[in-house]
Image (tube, rainbow, N blue to C red):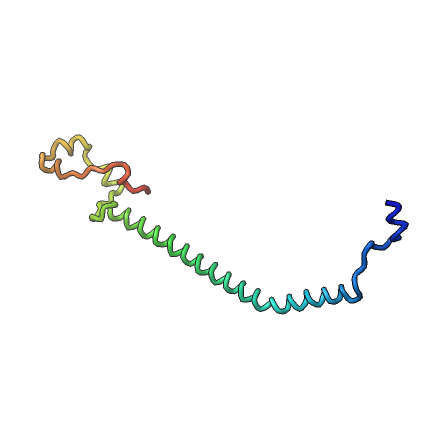
Amino acid sequence: MNDLKKTFGNGLPYSEPAGYVNKLLERCRDRAIAEAPRRRKNRAVSRLWLSVAGAAAVVAIVATVALRLTSMTSGGNGDDAVLCSVETVEQSAPLSVVLASMTDDQLADVSYYSTDDIPEY
């Protein structure tokens, strides 16, 4: 290490031509100025796509909620649903009494749903 210090002193062991740093700075400045409009355009395009993606997400959420509400009010099978209130349920007869009073034809017409067919609320 001391040999290098004796040979070159405190300076660097290499030198650059006169004006090298100034030319390098000028090239960088010129390139930055030339690319500025393109960068602004890229930002605008990115914002546009971000807005389109956001709008698509909002439409998907609204459509999902609307379909869910339609499914809830229609009973999930497209027929007119019978919405029950607390009073209606309290005044209704027990299931065993209702089933005992039904005829065989009425029982045959009853639709049975699996747990997959029942919408979640």
